[in-house]
Length: 292
Image (cartoon, rainbow, N blue to C red; front, side, top):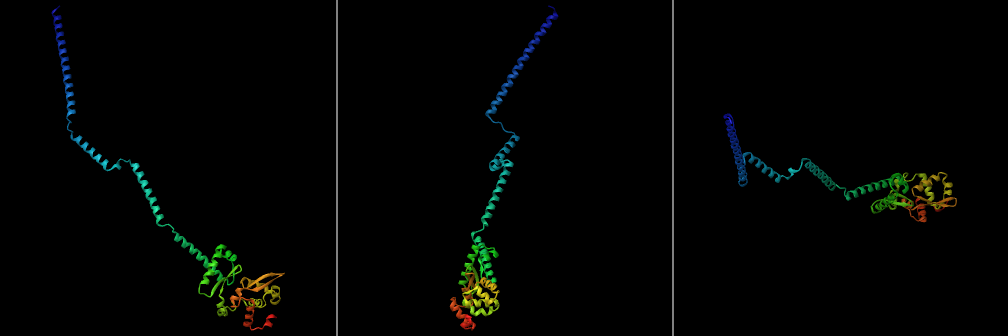
């Protein structure tokens, strides 16, 4: 072996030893670092480390946030859910206000009764006015057509009016003559007021026909026509409409007599024979003239 080769071999050995030493040193450093990390972890488990200033601020904010959650649980509710509950509460308040308004201003039974009484009173006044203006007996049928009040209501109203006048201290009365009703003077007041009705209560031509009927009743219509002429047909209709006479079928003609209304209106007796005598006395005629 040459000197050069020996030198190279020696250098290789030195290099190998250096590499081995470096490797051992590297392993020792790794072991030391690992042991130090293990000790730090053990110390952190045994003793808590002091928090930094930033960590303390974060922790305080967390405590405040928790306090707010405890004091204000509604803050956890999402915005849309809160708005929905507000809407429901508003609707509930509207419903409650409507119920309160209905409870505060319902139409009481007393108000309904008062309205019905006012309407009934108005109808009653209309019927009374119709009887007064007509100046003659009026049938329920005629009142129904002209006032548009139901027949059953009219009958009730007429009966109430008749009772009202009966209970009043008045010279008027409402009487029923067959199927008609008349507003007229009470018999006891007729002698005192009939002078004011001259030419107004009954026209003269009708009054003359009525006088003949009263004195000669019962009298046939055909006989009356012979006495008073063809105008007697109209006179009979006029007197029938006002309830002063009644007619009954007899043969081919009709028999005519006076009514209680005639007697009451003129202050005469309802008994026909007594009525005739009273008329003879009032008119100043004798029985022979009456019979003729």
